[in-house]
Every structure is written in C-alpha cells, then in structure tokens.
Length: 124
Image 1: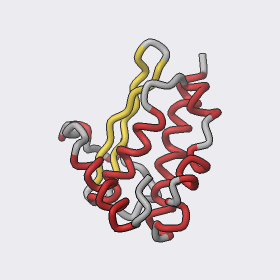
Image 2 (image 1 turned 135 degrees about the horizontal axis):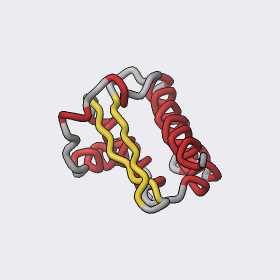
Image 3 (image 1 turned 90 degrees about the vertical axis):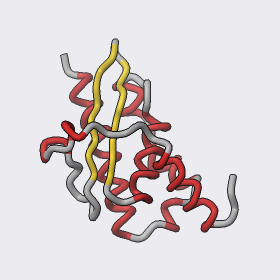
Image 4 (image 1 turned 120 degrees about the vertical axis):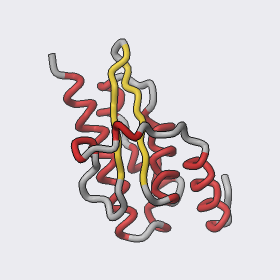
C-alpha cells in the first residue's frame, strides 16, 4: 500500500498507461459510459461464462481507474460481479475520499455499467 497520495495517483496513472490499446473501431457512442465527466468507453465480452473487459478514457487518471476496475472484475462470472462490492474495495484503497466528486461519480458510473453488463449476461 502506498501512503502518499501523490504516489498513488502516479501509480494509478501508470496502470492506465500499461493497459492494452483500445481499438478505435470500438470508440462509439453505444459503448460510452454515461455519467463521466471525461469520455469513457467500456466493452464487455462473455468468454465461456466469464466476463472480460476493455476500456479507455481521454483522461489519464480515469484510464488508470478503468485499469483498477478491470483488475477487480476481469475473468469473473456475471454472478460474482453482481455480488462483488467494488465500492467497498475502492473505499479500502481510500479512493472514496481522495477523488473529486466528479471523478467519484464517473467511477461509480463505470461500476454500475459493469454490473449492468453482468446482470444482462446472467439472463438466459
């Protein structure tokens, strides 16, 4: 755990920089996450009952937050994703008190989008 918040922000930004490139063909309005101040694209795919995600943002810190969320959710079943309390995990990292209100709202919009995708994937 990194105690200094400047260091944490740099670490989060670095996580975003290390993400795989997001295909330009996926940058459509249909995959944009609503409720984010920055532009955010998020795509989920169901691979043998486990969800995989790719995402991107035009803001470095948000791209890093996407990378964090992908670490939390990647490769889980839809039921595991729906049951997971990501807000609690992120609060444990201190993100709930150190992000601006706009960034927090965007982060929670991304979480809700992932949960909605998982709920849809659970339906027969």
